[in-house]
Length: 86
Image (cartoon, rainbow, N blue to C red; front, top):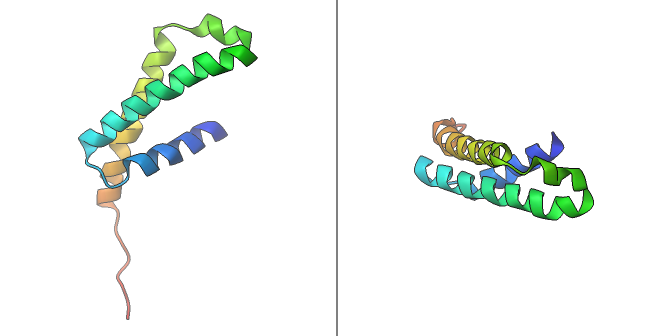
């Protein structure tokens, strides 16, 4: 769970200030990169990960990135900023 929280923070920083379409594209690319890093680098440490290489983890990482990339820009636009008091 901690790793997913950190990945959400990194993705939020990458998608900050962009529109929803760009956020989704950044999220999809981010999901693919994290998936391939997981399966390429982590297989050297944990050999059982090689058995999990199929379309399901790739699709879930892409969907995670796309949804997260879509939600952050829309939430940032809808956020209410406190009034500035002088």
